[in-house]
Length: 238
Image 1: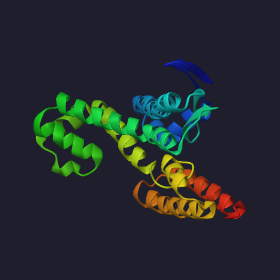
Image 2 (image 1 turned 30 degrees about the horizontal axis):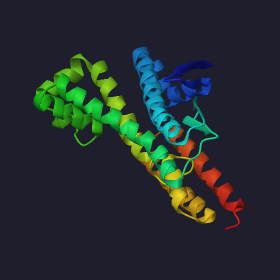
Image 3 (image 1 turned 90 degrees about the horizontal axis):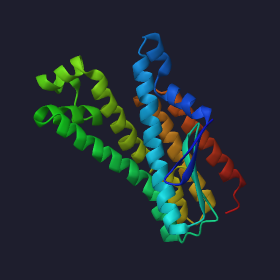
Image 4 (image 1 turned 30 degrees about the vertical axis):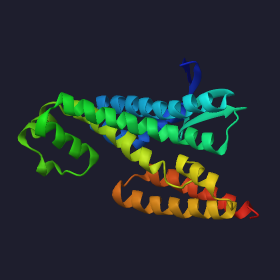
């Protein structure tokens, strides 16, 4: 188990975090192809990105609510704990939003870096490909040359964008215990209604994730969230 401090905040990284990253990054496929660099690069990217996200929660939460703060990276991502913190509804929502905002800032920084590294149409094409609104067949020759000759460099930026843009947006969906679920929960008074919204939204993500990403790990993760919400719905009295 990895333990360290950053900005005075204790961080614990459980072994299952690396296993989750391996499966999410299609590690077995890369192993079969002998692509060990892609496995190592992906694990560094997901570690760095999730740590930045949780630092957003931790630093803002400690500033606004005080208390004892620490971070845990585990099988389903990361958690920022705020023991004995005192939040008002407003500061609680600010703390929750700080995580996705930190990730989106990392996304913006990645895009700017790409445009500096590859100026002009080549950079714009590569950003479009990474975000997903451009097809490889639509790339100019300069962008194609980058993919052929220095693909690992593009892969790093591509995965940074994938994690920090799309995961930040998915994380804002009203699914407990995601950030969007916590935000929705702070507004919705009925626990049964909140759990129902969370369960239905998680079900939609399972279907879309299976159809678009074809990732059994994503389906498994959101099935777990849906099951938790179902249990909460069954146990809630109002």
